[in-house]
Amino acid sequence: MLAVLLFGFIGTVAGPGWNPHPLDEALVVQSSDVTIGGDVVTDPVGTYETRTHTFTVELDGAEVQATVHEPVGAPEGRPGIVFMHGAGTATHDNFWEMTEALASAGVVSIVPDKRLDNYTVRYRDYPAMAQDYLHSWEVLTAWPGVDPERVGVYGESEGAFIAPVAAAQNPGVAFVVLVSAPVVPAREQFALATDTYLRNLGAPERLLRAVPRLLGSEVPGGGFVYADFDVSPYQQRLHQPVLMVYGTEDASMPIVQGPATVIEDLAVAGNESYTLRYFDGANHGIRIDGRLAPGFPDAVARWTLGLPETADAEPRVAGGQPEQRFRAEPLDSPRWYASGDMIILTLVGGVVLLLLGPVLWLVSRLVRRPSERLPSPLARASAALGMGVLAVWVLFLSYILVVADLALNYEQSPLVVQGGWLGIQVVAVGATAVGVWSASTWLRVRRSGVRTGTVGTITLVGTHLGALVLLLAAGYWGIFPTLG
Image (cartoon, helix red, strand yellow):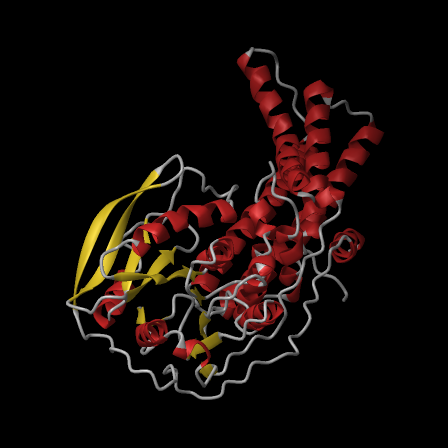
């Protein structure tokens, strides 16, 4: 009991804690109708036939494929949009449904491949990516039938970090469309999304404490500087009209705090030309049951075609009423003993210590030296300890993967979430009890004068020290129960 309480106490005081602040501010929609207002007349989606052209765009030091979607028979002086991808790999075939709808209303769009030679999990340079997309913007400004002064940018998800940078760097960009924009730095957005997913699943409070301990630490091996990229300084330089779009069921984004921050940033530049639309029941991709939310392409098309009249047309904020329970905020960093490198060192070191004895025993057999046997109770106890501690971590890591899968697929399973967590705690308590039994058995054997031999002693030291390290780590991650 004392050992279990000690491990649980370590998990409580080791820090950092997790207590996200409720979001006090609110954005109240002025109308449930997502239609873009104004008296200007624009062609609706479905007016024109469309056609596509795929070609190569030269970048600085690379080249990408790009596809232009354009209307057939539309009048000269059409607006254009450069599409910027979200996180991950993406090609010129993305956004097809959206770009075809826009083209049928008279908007020309270009979708370039995402440049991947300088885009990795560890390294991303958003200003450099903005320059790459501006090459496609230049292509579109010179496209036949396009008005070069009416070409803007469209950033979705991670692309919404890049679009404001491009527009700030190049004042010739006519407008900015931000779809499912994180706005806050990615590290804060990841923490908010993780917390929201876990709460929606009914995850135990102890598991929520892992959010800052995992996402607030530096990643082993370095990198991920982009996780702290702040787009606000670029948004504060925007003088272009901005359209923001969110789905009310997007649990991964700060759907209230994000647009509120954009509006505040635009005010710094004296820019009041913003429009905000919430699509009721839509997810991060502004989709409902796999299809684009009704009215989404129509709103983007009319807003784009109607500029500058639609830049501040009423209602400014419309659609479903968004809800965001907690603020996305900077995370406290774990202490030195729980940094990214130390996390890996602790887990790997603990496992190596556990396996040290069995490996030495096998080596002694291979070189045909007589293997030294531990006394039977001690051998059973130390073997049970090693297997029990490994079982705790295998179950815990498997549980994390299962919970993540449930969260990302918006599924509920109280039996798995609550029952699985209880099961891990039971195994952790059991492993601790076995550890006490094994250590006390070892002490009695030593007092009795029975020799355990060199290999046996190394095995015992490695097993108990490795188990202690891994159980301390389990305590840090909140696996053990506590009194509060």
